[in-house]
Length: 214
Image: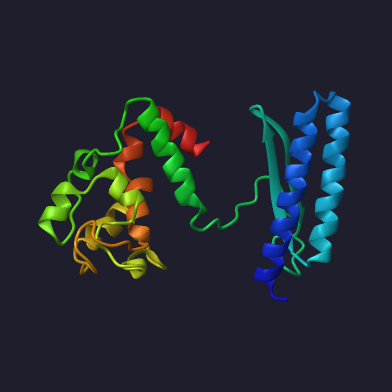
């Protein structure tokens, strides 16, 4: 079993354990002592599972009712390394960041600072696609739905292994050929997430910016 399979299996096991933990917490008001005992048992379960599935290291946080019940690292940062994982260790989370981006945008919408159907150009006046109509009409929800006309994985080499800032990446994306007409097809493009995560959509809202950084 390779590392990816081990991580997936471990994730499934831990997800099941977290559901069980949540059910115990929600079924009856637990005392602080009982909660700590449950968390201690869970920590032991995590470490046992990590060793059984031969995963070098991981970090887990449990938040309930806005209270951090657990924030802890297990194992080492790399296989064979002596550097341990703690609650501050950074992991590559790949496209999970898109979920955070969508949630942050939803907060802006709830607060009336942004609308799903706002034109992207309202927030990024310098934004361009190769198609003038798409440039003018593309909305925030089009970026989230990956229907700008860019093809799947198009433009990946603009950001992968480069020193370009998010804005520089997007400015160069204006030269990319579109794979389809605007809103006619789905194309999984990381550049559409770049427009959201690295753009003035966040910078313009200081409250969300502070929340995002914390």
